[in-house]
Image (cartoon, rainbow, N blue to C red; front, side, top):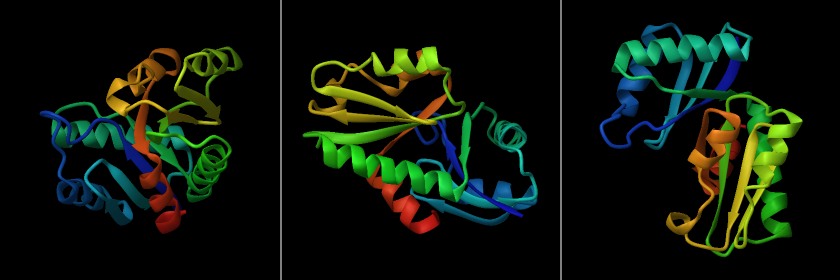
Length: 177
């Protein structure tokens, strides 16, 4: 059995409700093991015999849509990959502290070299964007709601992504990484 850390995009926002108890039940009924969730934003740890990230993501997305009636983009990481994202976030934050916060957009796919340049070119005064693998690190010297760089802007370049505060990434890496 492989252990996976699963991040759901845009659940429990507006009408896209997916209570974590319902999510855990759906995953358990579908045969996933050791299912745990963390807070209400779609952070899940589970085990699965599936070893392919793409196969697992497709299976989960089909399950979630059947269960909820709306599509749920899903990004999966191994515990080691999540720990690496947290380490990189720490290094970047220490090298260039953000006055208003640090966020990480977790990507479905690793961007091409050309797309990676486009993502990092989104940086602007007070908004630093750094790509590491399948994680886009946002270090903000402006309030989050005032930032021009957003998860939506990142998705326009590299496709599906879900955004988390770096505190959540660190907590999950400590708990599940």
